[in-house]
Amino acid sequence: MILLTVIAALGVLLYSSFLLNPANRGDWLPYSMVIVAESLLIVQALLAMWTILSGASSPRDYAYYAARDALFDPKFIARNGKDATQWPFRLNGNDTLVDVFITVYGEPVDTIRRTATAARAMTGKHRTWILDDGKSDGVRDLAAELGCHYVRRLSNNGAKAGNINHALSIAKGEYFAILDADFVPKEDFLLETLPFFVSEDVAFVQTPQVYGNLHTVIARGAGYMQTVFYRFIQPGRNHFNAAFCVGTNVVFRRQAVDDIGGMYTASKSEDVWTSLLLHERGWRSVYIPDELAVGDAPDTIEGFTKQQQRWATGGFEILMTHNPLSPRRRLTPDQRIMYLVTATHYLAGIAPLLLLLVPPLEIYFDLRPVTMDLGLGTWLLYYAGFYVMQIVLAFFTLGSFRWECLLLSTVSFPIYTRALFNVITGKDTKWHVTGGNHRVASPFAFMVPQVLMFTFLLPTSFVAIWRDINHSQLTLATIWNITNTIILGAFIGAAFRELARRRRPAAEPVTEPTPEPALRTVIARPADSPVAVLTRDDLVMAGSTATQEVSS
Image 1 (cartoon, rainbow, N blue to C red):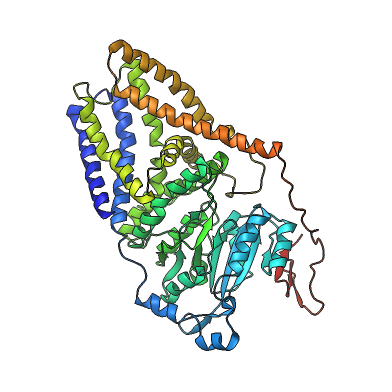
Image 2 (image 1 turned 60 degrees about the vertical axis):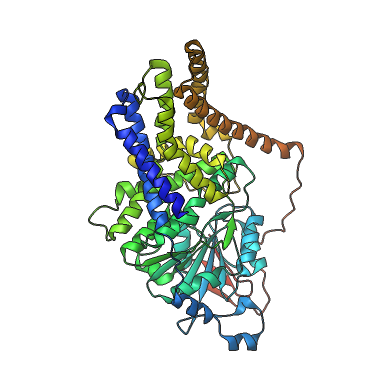
C-alpha cells in the first residue's frame, strides 16, 4: 500500500506539472475549468496519500493490553458463573458503568430488534437504551420484551444529538456507546474499545462502518466509497489526533462530552462537530479499523442523496463558520490540516460538473483545454499517471475495480452543490436516517440534474461521432463525452431497476406479521416491581421491564 501510494503521488505531481506547463495550455475557458476541477482533485488526493502514509502504527499500546487483561475480575467470574453479559467492567481498578444508546427515528421494528438483541448480548455488564425519537408504541413494546431501557422525548429538538443529550440527563454511566438502529454490534464490541479509556485523555473510540446489504448498485457504491476512508484514512488521522466520530459504532467518555456541553446540536452532522470541539479542548480520539458492527448502506437513490447531503453540509458548515485555519481555533497544525481536508472534501465532489462540460465545448465550439500540438498519446500518458494509479489504489484496497464507485462519484455533483448552496444561504436541511421506515419517493425526484445532463450529453455524443467520421479521426473529446454519457446512463438505469423492485411486492404481496397490541396507558410488570415517577421529565420507569417513557 505504501509503495502504491508513493507511485500514485508521483503520478499526481507529474500530471500537475503537465497541466500547469504554459506550453500545453489551450483555450482559456476549458483550460480554466480543467485547472479548477483538477486542482481540487489533486490537492485532495495528495493530502489523502499523506494521511495514508502516516497511519502505519497501531493505537494499541502496552497500557491498552494491560487494561484489557484487567477488564474483568476473575474471582467474580468464578463465583457468579459464565454469563459474560453480567461481568462488571473494571478500568484503573474501579468498577465502570457503561450505557449503550440505540438511536431510533422511524426504522422498522425488525431492524431495531436485531440491533437491540445483539447489544444486550455484548460481553460485559452494561445497560442498553432505546432512544425513540420516532415515538412508536411498537418500539416501546419491543424494549419491554427485550429488557431494554426505553426513552421517548416530548420533542425532537436537536435531532440525533438532542436525543443523545436527553438520554445523558437520565443515564449516568461513565462511558456510553452509540449505535444507529441498523448497526448490529458484535459480542466483543465493548471488550475491544473500553481498554483505550485507561488513558485519561481519551474522549472517544471510533470503529468503522461496515455494510451488509450490498445488494444494489447504490448500496455497493455507497459502501465501497467508504472503504478507503475507514481502512486507510482514519488510521492515518490517528497519527495527528484528528480521527473523528462518524455517529455510530463509537464509545464516548461522558466526562469529555460534558466538558463541551454535550453533543453538538446546531448541525445535522453532530458527529464531526462534536469531534472538532473535543479536539479543541485538548481531548484525544482513537480509531481502530476492527469491524465490530455491521449495518445498512443506503440502497436507494433517495437514501444516498440525503445521506451525502447531510455529510457534505456538515463539512461545508465547518469551512464557512468554524474554519480550522482560523487563529481562534485551538488546534495543532496537523489537526488544522486534517479538519481543512474534512471541510473541503466535498468540494472535490463538485469538480465532475466542470469536467462533464469540457468535452461539449470542444465538440460544439472547438475549444480545447490543451493545445492541438499535443498528441493524444502524450495526453493519455500524463492523464494515466493520475487516474490510472487512483484505480490501481482502489483495486488494491477493494480487491477489484468497483465501477459503482466511479458511477456515484461522477453523478453526485448536484448533491454537493446543493449542500454548499444551503450552507451559504443558511437553509436548514431535514434530518433523515438511513433505512428509515417512511414513504419513499420516486428516485427520479432526486436526480433531475443528472437526467438533464444525460439528455444533453447523449445527442452531443452522436454529434461528436458524426464529426469524427467526417474528419476520419477519433478525438479525445468524443471518447470522454461517450464515457460520461454511459456513466450517467448507468445511473438512470439504476433508478429504473429501483422502481422495478418496488413494483415487485405489489404484484406478489407479502403478508406482514401482525404485531401484538401496543400497551397505551399501562406498562405490564410483576406486582412487586417498583415504579419511580420523575415529574420533572414526566418520566415513568418500570423496574422489571427496564422501560422508561416520556409521555405527553
